[in-house]
Image (tube, rainbow, N blue to C red; front, side):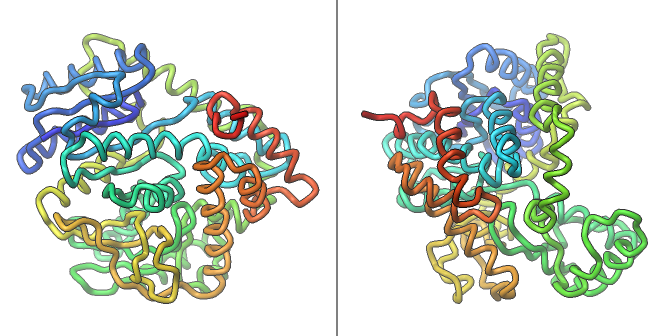
Length: 432
């Protein structure tokens, strides 16, 4: 079985390699292809990955390539973890918002939109390669941010290519709730005995349930969580908000619920998060180049993305072995939340098995949540159209629709700045 990883030169890749190595008994991988357009970076990261595999007895072949078509050919799974424009483009996304007095962030607001415009055509090209040369039924597993928006584009413009979007935020939240439950019960609990109930959009979701062996333990978790918030000097959330919602917002909702605080924090830039990650990656690549290094270094945790390899390899393993496990993924609603449009890509629990990704029936979120979801989904749908067709009018409307976007008198200036800053990566907007 062949798996192809697009963005193989990512500093996350060594963790992913370990994830595959830990599952070789159940997931019979024979070839893992790492594809990246940056040959120098691929040589460093890929060389380190090859040493990791060799140190574990070479259970599968690891191939490095800059050829997208060769990477996809005969693959059973294709994963995407790429960044069009690399880390400098992320920095530009953050400072795009900053210089216009808006949120500067790589996955939401104007920065997230810029990233989506660069990324969607590239991911759709990969889907086209899969349609032509991958194994029948091969699945595209997208980790590239903004994950939900990219998956929305795949579902609309490559519906015949099985695809799913994945993010590490839900599993990170699950492990935090599990830790709290273990403290409450005074015992260690296997994560497989628990399930997190989450609903919304990627980076715009609400955690609203937790079960242990099928039993609902959410009320006791909420009781303890609210008590902790009330005891903290600077709590992550206003305890009154949690008391009313009886849900825990995804931490990205801070950008929407507490925008002034986030904007104030940007005033201390530089360094932005991208500036910090650029330095972290320089150090990681230096360590990866060490010919004696055979295990991911502890400094990889500075990069963020906890549980990335767990999310990635567990999903592929569940699909291949028809385990019917529940995973939080980004996929089409398809009537699971019958009150919401079926073609919306949502972040929600789904059963994962050989028959694909099946979203589980769920009750809709309350109106206070749905209003924000509907507004952001409108932005997402317009951004997909803008990215696919190079449609400047759709891009203008997307900026106007986003709750973190510019006001009417500022929209055109922000759009012009976004397109000019990313001109090299947005040929569809500059044709003719």
